[in-house]
Length: 125
Image (cartoon, rainbow, N blue to C red; front, side):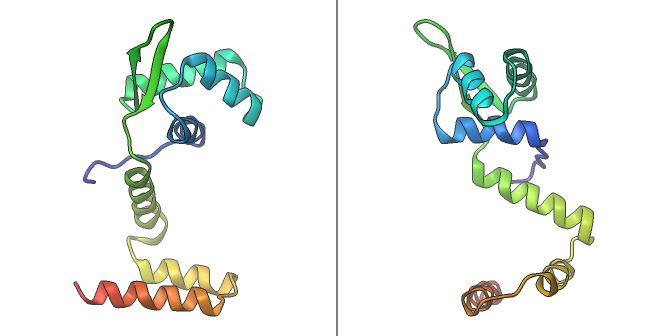
């Protein structure tokens, strides 16, 4: 994906709600956000309105209410957010990211094998 997407934490929560199940009405989103995060109805409806304006979500007219669905695909957002983090915090250098994370986390043999497989695939390009 060429376009950079940088969701706020609140936007991420609404997107997760819609990725989990869509379409959803505003009231279904409100209920989900209240259950999960304790958001008020006005907070949830404001987030939905803002995200619609940004083009992150859209709606179709349902029988009784608008039904919202995500425009953005989860895997595209994850890739974009990861690239944003890499660029911002690590000057775009994957090695610096790994070097920062590895000493703080004990890697299992499974982790090491997975990293080796990733590097092997990357080297085969």
